[in-house]
Image 1 (cartoon, helix red, strand yellow):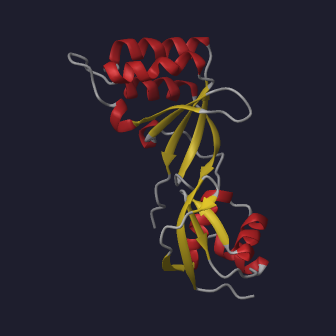
Image 2 (image 1 turned 120 degrees about the horizontal axis):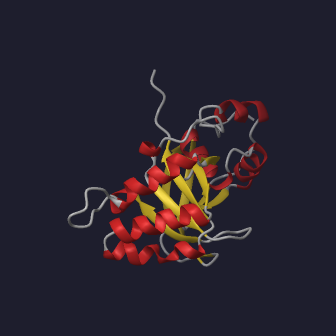
Length: 207
């Protein structure tokens, strides 16, 4: 089946897995808009995307979206997906492009212990010439975090810095010396963190 250029979509808030009685909103999505939303849930998994397009429903950011399901031609869908970014393990870590640092716990399903955005991390203590964020990304840059994946929901490349005794000590010293009071309190999660994932939004290619 030829992929439609536009898709009438209905959506409503969803709570705890149940559709609420709140009003249903109707909107027409372009195909790229619908695929962009589905990619945020599935990643670039063509089989899952075809299944969701056929089922006609997806939950995204606490809303359930519904449309008349359709079968997507495999070749056409593959062509449509080429318009979206791919993971790029060869892409180097650039500290200046990172906007968020996510401190994660250990385990197969790590918890987000702290999400530190650059704006908050750049706040300086009085009489300090540098911010905690500047020191944090300097430590990360020295160790060259490993490329993890591309996040469609964040529209960003993710880089993973595994924590060890040495870099934990460096980060803890930076927190004590440079972080303002509220941030210093938030960083008490550091001893239980296993890694920091740096979120670096991908810049559009220059044409």
